[in-house]
Length: 284
Ligand code: GLN
Image (cartoon, rainbow, N blue to C red; front, side, top):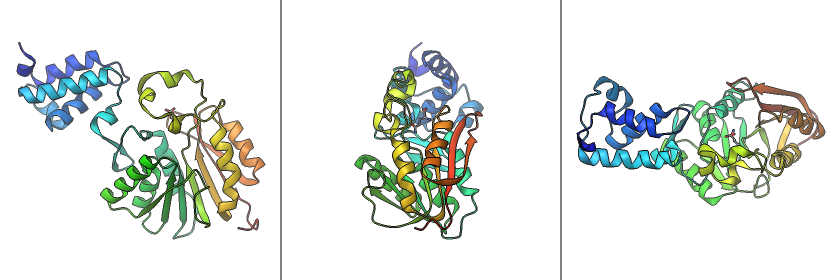
């Protein structure tokens, strides 16, 4: 029997056997959806539907790419984050579900209306766009060092019709003088020699978005030290970090004079986010 005569369910099951991932069946269904336009629900509802030859060719090409380790998000060109379909590409990090905890935490803060918020190292624009989608009164800006990421975040903002200003800047260095009530960031925080970098999907994401010096803390050190100069008194800095970096990041917040420092856990129960307030009365 040729590939073209395969039913949807047979093709998905054969493909899943070739894909080395935590979720081979889901990956195969998503690739099938991309190759045929049939949603996962429709694939399940009509498993015996035969594939046309062109559909089978497209599907097996995607499966071969996935089998070499290419992330599903890169093959689909899209990844869901919060409630938003975001375009993704190899220029930046694929948004992670853990980062939705950061969005949830930011939205739960007691900040004034029309809060000015800055997302440092925005990548696809995920955090900034999720905040803008939930809080139309907030003034959301974002920056990224990589021009390709700036272009991608701007394209996502435009496609979603969300008013986020994106500028190219290495952390704060290229920003016009201004103050924020809230600064958020999911910076690179993986140590340069971390073996995870040579496994799975991480191999296909740029090191600039993942790696931060020998201990993974170079960028967090810089961001935490510089942030007070860009926050109003009482303003909040909220950052994502590695599961084993909570103690070190709290110490950085402490050294920079932050108050009410706390660490929150991600959906997997790992320490993942730290936040603190610039002291009230500390000046702008
Ligand atoms: N949490 C991501 C991972 O381990 C890394 C994200 C980051 O470096 N900001 O895959």
